[in-house]
Amino acid sequence: MATTTLAEVTAELAALEDPKAREVNARHGDDHGVHLGALRALAKRLKTQQDLARQLWSTGDASARLLAVLICRPRAFERDELDVMVREARTPKVHDWLVNYVVKKSPHSEELRLAWIADPDPVVASAGWALTTERVTKKPESLDLPGLLEVIEAEMKDAPDRLQWAMNHCLAQIGIEHAEHRERAIGIGERLEVLKDYPTSPGCTSPFAPTWISEMVRRAG
Image (cartoon, rainbow, N blue to C red; front, side, top):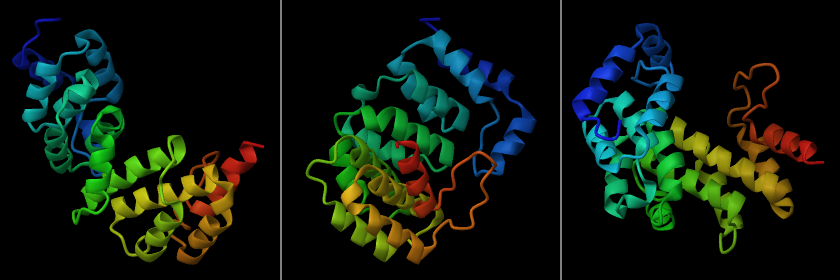
């Protein structure tokens, strides 16, 4: 399928549309109706096609954008191009895939992290916090962890949902990965009580930071 056209791919996506899947996804704020397994299978057939990925993204369709993320070449995007794409990605799944599958692999990720974490748009800021969490886990050198904890303590309680979730993830990872900050991270979580009552399925770990931190540390022995 190396010469597949945009029209052919969008027709196939339309054929894969499942109204029931769209209904389920809509409950989570997403607006696509193609099963993710079907998207991944299509991406596997298409392989990497950067030009087609850009065309799919430009349609504005959520399923097309998810497919674009899967077949693109992350390092081929310019810094400003990624900035525009994150601002266009308003639904959770498209936003999450773009950040995790593309931006995190970009040579511009650190520059974008610094720009986005202070952005007035809470969805864009959540991308900055997601990139910060990645650094907390994999490359914490030169990060001001006490400073991050101060910002989280001051701002997470009243942050919009998606930004709050991203900040909470960062709080948990600081506590999990950095023993010297663990007590403070747990204390912040206990005081703010963010996601304390979040419904958690049996066998899953609560996103409430003190519980999350304690469970992951326990598992690590």
